[in-house]
Amino acid sequence: MSQERGISRVVNVPPAAPGFVGPGHLAAPVVSPENFEMTDPFILLMDDHLDIGNRPVGGPHPHAGFETVTLILDGAIFDRDEGGTLNAGEVQWMTAGNGIIHSEDVRTKGKVRLLQLWLTLPKNKRWIAPDFQTINVNEVPVRREKGAEIRVYSGSSAGLQSGTRNHVPVTMVEINLEPHASAELDIAASYNGFACSIGRLTSVRACCVWSPANPERGWCYMRDNPKETQSYPMAHL
Image (cartoon, rainbow, N blue to C red; front, side):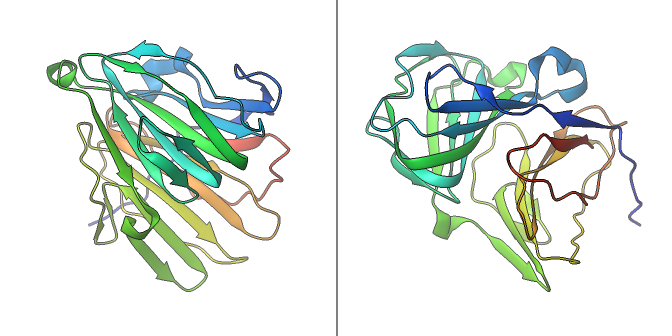
């Protein structure tokens, strides 16, 4: 029998501020690394807005021991070394494993908004071989019901199973709700996670992520519909 879970806490994500790329880059920390004991296995989640023309996003730098997940919300990016073009509604997983030099010679195509999630790998998998996965838009399972669309980027939800190869058992979904609509998601009681409102003017859009961790977290139902230029709520599950 399923049971309703409570919300551990609700925080306001600060307004986007100038980011490391320079002019044309705004970023907001949705999940901050300072509270890892509460957010484990999630290290951080950044909400990035890029309008930088043909400048590269960054330069070569090392990663090891964790995974990054890049979800394109609006626009598109191109990386000749790491998967080519990534369009809106597509996601890329980079498993750093035992070490990788991340070129990050990324170019944007128009104005881009993306979410980047960092996940710590389990101790027994931190020295695995590096890997990349790109989940194209036509490979993302979609559940549609009255007034709701749920896109499953990782894990499973409502009988839908993503093809993502996970080293950390993460479920990641995007929910789009029309006015006055609602949707329910089943989540294991032992999972930790969060939901954040992505923001729209006439409907609700949210990203929800959860994974095994502290069993004393809860779930939430997003009701807010703020403008993208304002701070917005993130609820810990």
